[in-house]
Image 1 (cartoon, helix red, strand yellow):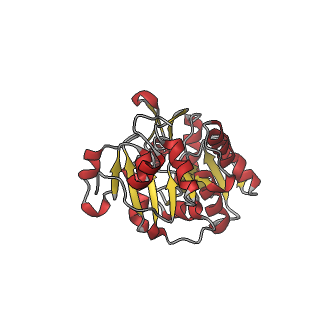
Image 2 (cartoon, one colour):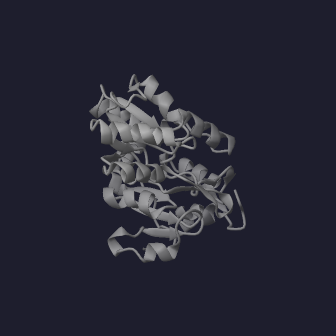
Image 3 (cartoon, helix red, strand yellow):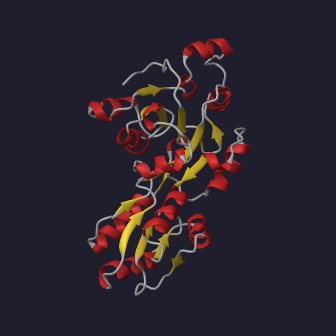
Length: 283
């Protein structure tokens, strides 16, 4: 684990978004010029998120609004991976999504049947859902425990979603825990980081070796965890969830390759000096 800037460029860069590129609706220092610099150097950039409350179109609008115009095919999240996994492995399944509208919309568009009838539900999807209520828990309980026909998957394993000012909201893991607690079941599959399926969604048609790519994020368990599982170089930025002390406490083979205070330090120093970048700039 290194606390200094990388000294080389990589074939492609995959970025978590919230806590890495922006926090809430504010770009983090150096994020805009970093993305512009990588693109100027001809390095592919991809954005990846575990947050299923937005679809890629909504993420594109946000990045565009924040001054980082991004093509739609450079963005992937758990709405994409969940829908893709269901179509590939269980195309005829009836699902009950405990989720917000973006995932439900993607499921409808993919032709995946949804139901609230426990007698016909094959898969319960636990997701980030700010409308979660006892009725939904009862449906999941009946489908899994009483009728003994459904199994449980989740869009992402995050415990909470970080907000500016140190606050946050309970995320999908809290709903998974509620369902596991009352049914005695165990989660069958996770569609988000750190699972390698997220890397496949991010790289898409890029002809690159993951070992020559870099994953950049603020969370050890998901962002850095996916890099470790797939053999990627990784960078933990200290602008979101985890600290350098927490990274250093991990076993050596689970630690990030780099730890940085500023995301634009991903660019080797020789380029930053050539371009006249200063840490006093907030672009």
